[in-house]
Length: 409
Image (cartoon, rainbow, N blue to C red; front, side, top):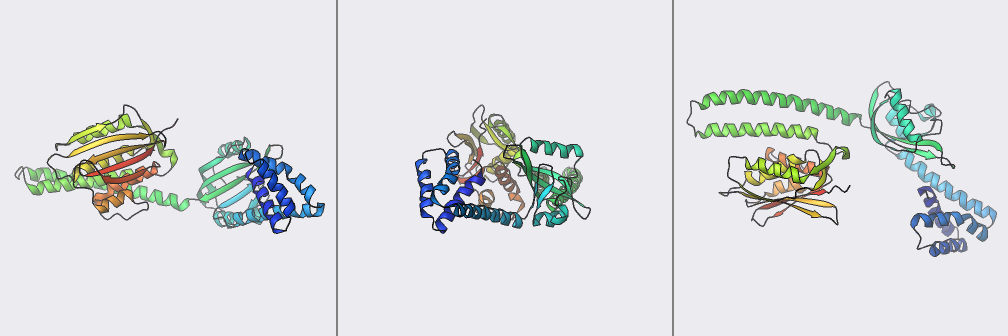
């Protein structure tokens, strides 16, 4: 049974109570109790099918009409209030695609007044190709929903908006196509910000790469005239490497989004050994042990390997022991359909400020560039519908855990 009928039954219960029709309400309640063991949908269908019979037996015809009319009016008022104050454009079209409802949000976002638009066909304003518009309508007529499709939409003033569109078909009593409901959200400013940031990011990265290449060239020439262990040369090289790493992080941030479509199956049995080998290729002596299954697939953002790199490198970079130790393990919880990738070390422990970068549930300001990798790690894991936690490791240092949803299909 539809949610509309479910709401109607609940509204009738309240009206019968408010207007003192206790016997009618009790008769309806008795029917409910007699079907208490039924599945919810079956229960509601049974109540609705017996509703008119109960009212016929308990109240006179005029009262029955008044009760039903009041219930319908309340539901319509509730629906109208929601549509009226919605901050998005809400449109309802009939089976001929002619607009019947055009809310205040539609007038505010798209520019046209409701009186001007009612009766016109939709989606005439979508500036996609005619073939694309027909394809969208075909999906609706086939009973399918449109889920957050990005499109371009005309505005009354002649401009073109970037929008996201949701739509669902309406059915007639005979279960045929009876029209559709559209919800349109304006994402123009967001898209503009994304485009400007993307351009700025690419320009800065291009300039940084060029400048670093030039500086390194001059540094190599100067290094030939300095002692091999000159600390000034080493410091400059380290700083240049940090700048290059910042450029890489900026590139990854540009790629990072929060859409589920960007999540992909990731085989930890293939990815984690590769990241461990990458860590061991560093010139510093590192002891790494791992317990990684041959194959275990999670669903994660495509940049998840970079998040693992950040955690592994952080375990070594700030480790002041003579021989840094790192343990990588994978724990699978079948009952909860998630996997935990843990990285433990024997270092001095992660400073509170960097722990906050990883574990804060809200966006926090970045206080220094060294936290950028960890900040990006949290973004990647959260975009994977996962969580990050930090604790003490059995090695005496820090244990960072990345919790990810397991692939279930």
